[in-house]
Length: 399
Ligand SMILES: Cc1ncc(COP(=O)(O)O)c(C=O)c1O
View 1: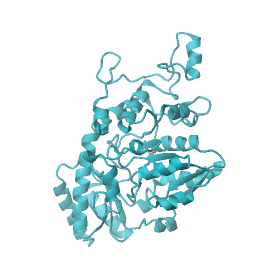
View 2: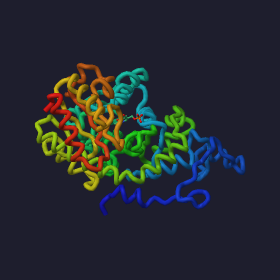
View 3: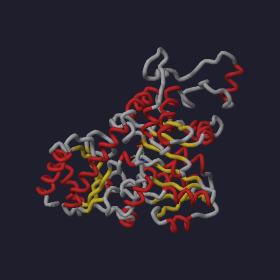
View 4: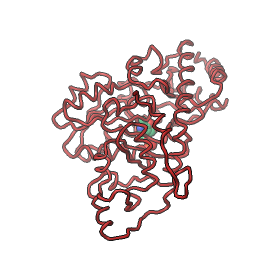
């Protein structure tokens, strides 16, 4: 049977403490034990169903983790206080001093800064590559390499990683393939394509209301246990724990993710086709002109479309700024970073979410000054939105 992440979300069944239809929120930082022996067993990781201390795990966090694992088709998952709070422990768990990571060069600016500026202090080196060129990826692997890292759809250039091919490479060299799937929840299921660990910033589409920060790492029971190990688990020891109240609110929002992703994709696809027809330089994986359109099509869970993210290049930062300000004034959306909100969000990545990447490197990877990244909203009438956008573009001479 074909993997359908929405069915897995639909089929989640939790009962609250008093028969509630939502799981009860565990409002405790510490937990009692009926015997000292069970406490010891729990410390050693051998007492299923017992809780120790909320930095380790909480019933609410476990519920959200299990829901996300069901969505990604992994054995289990560990939630964290932010996307970075999920990604950084995963990498530190898998790679140690003297070892090496091969990473896509087009990734979220924060992850890039972590690998470029922070992990070298721990003697972990990273080679950044064009992830779409498998021969270049393979050539970058050394006998010190432990991890291949990429985003399924990259921030902000919307390059698409061939997860199956990267997984074959990872297996050949005994590496772990870690995929950040923040841009394409439901549309792409990286673990089903061979990724070992799938991370998300829950802050974006999965929560979807721009009121919470969160993250998750989905993987095998063994790896998630490693992350939570009280002696040497990076998640446990670095301590980026999600609050139980937040876990409960994100779980509730997650239930509408399939509906929302369909609408985000529908709207983004509509606009991308219109923009391209208008002669704008438009990047969207759903456009036949996208260099990885076929690849995305071959990997996707069709029902959820090509996602809600698109970019246009309006030629200069001045024009990009003027257009974004005008669109905000006309109430088309917000000039803001982040993604996955009900309203459209737009920003110029070169001077915002990717500003950690040096200007020379931005140039090399094709991140131009005039690039505007859109997270397209849930607009009920996208044709009306398009007309409003077009009139802003005409007014400013972008069209
Ligand atoms: C692709 C991607 N991964 C990770 C992150 C980091 O997530 P958070 O801000 O929740 O730490 C972001 C944030 O923008 C992102 O876009």
